[in-house]
Length: 111
Length: 121
Image 1 (cartoon, rainbow over the protein chains, first blue to last red):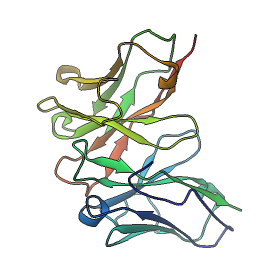
Image 2: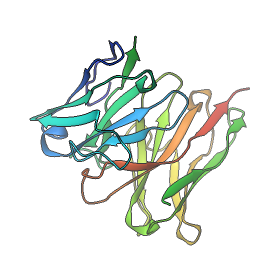
Image 3: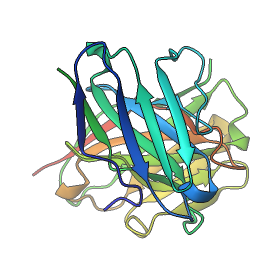
């Protein structure tokens, strides 16, 4: 059972928009920055969004992040078949000496 | 280029020991946390533990305390994950990853390519 809660799966058609939620608490999302990770099949996770809403160099602006209170959201517009992947949210948890926690992951299917 | 390069896939028998590695390059190795992340087949990411190469401060998630050992060799900028007695349930993909030390702001920004560990009799 992950500390951060994500929907197991979402789906949408090519060209559409999808959002993925990540819910936590005051010890994690409520008082820390949120990041998002994309894991394409058979590959290592990759940082997609950091600092709640910033994109690393090379990440297209179709990907966006937001945070409100103890929840965060990843948005993807103009869906492409290449976006099919698992998406994870992550943040620090102030109750953990190891700091980092991840959500359980969301499988995005582009129909 | 900042990168973490992990050692290759391993196939072991239950009860055997194992040490896998993660070599950092292209940045000041001593000033970032390096963590190990387990991903069991078809499952999500689990943060196992973390080490700060600057002073070898090491911390383990409760689920992994006593099950694995994380260590560092600053002279070769390499972090290790080891088991003294493997179990079949240790079969998984293991990733090392880099994190800043001050806050979660910069995310886990660099990941190794992964090391697949298979434990089978």
